[in-house]
Length: 66
Image (cartoon, rainbow, N blue to C red; front, top):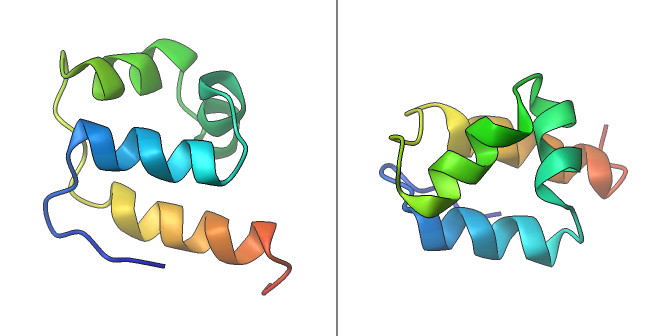
């Protein structure tokens, strides 16, 4: 996994697609609305500072790490 101190919308979209997730699936895993994910990817809302750490945890779970 990569750690982005300031993840941008393209990095988020790329990460989600590499994991094979839809915006809705990612939203459900994060406990946010699907529109929150869409707004982050569209650049309409700032990506939360801790989102990269949450994505790292999700990636480990998806890979069966824990």
